[in-house]
Image (cartoon, rainbow, N blue to C red; front, side, top):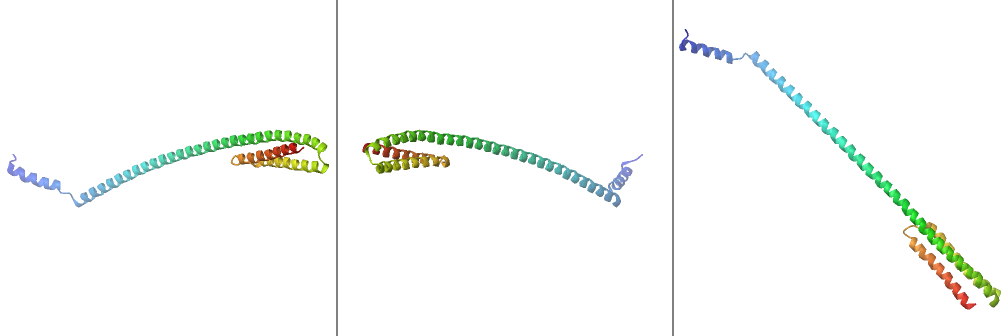
Length: 184
């Protein structure tokens, strides 16, 4: 039987032998550990590359989406601006036409007054005076018609100014006719 005295030295020798590795075994173990570390590093790098690719794809999709939304907003703004421009042009054309129509009616009425005035003046004045009076009134009438042509070039910013000019010339013509009526 084995006694403690005989077992102990055997156990010590066996544990020393079992704990001792040969240099070849240690090198093989180190190489396996290095290969495992390299494989683990490659897996981590591969996983990291996948995550970076996912992040890049997500960022690209979000950028594309933001660009599409911005382009759509820009397009909508351009359409709105175009519609408002068309509306403004229509309003400007209507305002021009309203001024033209009302002024044309006034001119026609005033020119009728000039014709009647000429008939009366021919009875009371000399031909030279009548011709001079009628020429003066026709010149003022033509000035009104010229100012009406300015309406075609009027913009929304200067339409009121052009209207004032037209109204002023109509008033001048009307005053000249009234003055001539008093003299005749």
